[in-house]
Length: 244
Ligand SMILES: Nc1ncnc2c1ncn2[C@@H]1O[C@H](COP(=O)(O)OP(=O)(O)OP(=O)(O)O)[C@@H](O)[C@H]1O
Ligand SMILES: [Mg+2]
Image (cartoon, rainbow, N blue to C red):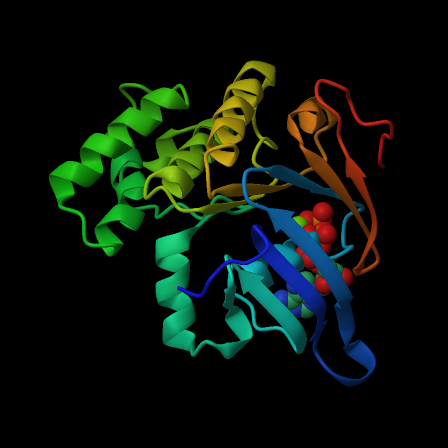
């Protein structure tokens, strides 16, 4: 891996992305500059359609961008081939999708095990870790169940466990508490905060949920495909603004 000179977990410069062409084209990202640092939990807020999921997908390497540069821990995504990007993502990035994306034919514990199995762990080791993480998100004893027999909030917690199981350095979360009640939302954010503050790691959270703003180290506001403002959050103080 390349040397990571500035302690940036993510460093985005001039990234643009347009979907479609001609009269139906939608420019979702307009020369975005953005960074997330090692050891922080960074939140991104902004109105529906402003480009938050698009930005996360480009950082995760699941969506190609049209222009600009994205470094993740000092490695330039735009210089990687598709297979290099996939290998890099598998080792370094955990993603909690807005729509969960659990595999319907696999049990909760099997879903959570997938990232470790892909990275070469034995089934026994992967399932042991998966059971432990499911317990951490409040799903002890539910590991054998298929996603269809779990509630939306329970499925979301399986997705959170899956994003953490292989101990990736960067965790990217798209609305991780959207289906969670207050208690499970707080439990999830405490877990993500603990992960974010470990050396060399970083958590980026897109959210509309003002109950969880207090867990952010910094807040980034997006508007219409651009970063509008960045707020540093002092210890223990809640952010001085309420978006939306
Ligand atoms: N695959 C796609 N094809 C065409 N347009 C897309 C695609 N994905 C996103 N867009 C468009 O890009 C813009 C940004 O979408 P994006 O999903 O990034 O918004 P968002 O900020 O995540 O919104 P939300 O808060 O509703 O999840 C929107 O106008 C959307 O319609
Ligand atoms: Mg979105």
